[in-house]
Amino acid sequence: MRNNQNEILTLLLSASLLIAIIQMLIKSPAALKAGLFKEALEHISIAQEGETKKR
Image (cartoon, rainbow, N blue to C red; front, side, top):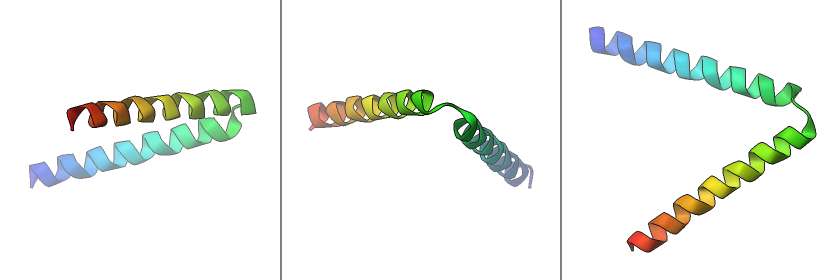
C-alpha cells in the first residue's frame, strides 16, 4: 500500500512540474523558446549518435 502511495505522489509531482514548465514556456519570449527547442534537438541528436555507436 505504501509503495502505491509513493508512486501516486511521484506522478502528481511530475504532473505538477510539467504544468509549471509549460506555463513558464507559454509566458517566455519566443527567443527563449527557440533556444530551448534547439537545445532539446541537440540532446536528441547526441542520444541518437550514442545509440548508433552502440550498434
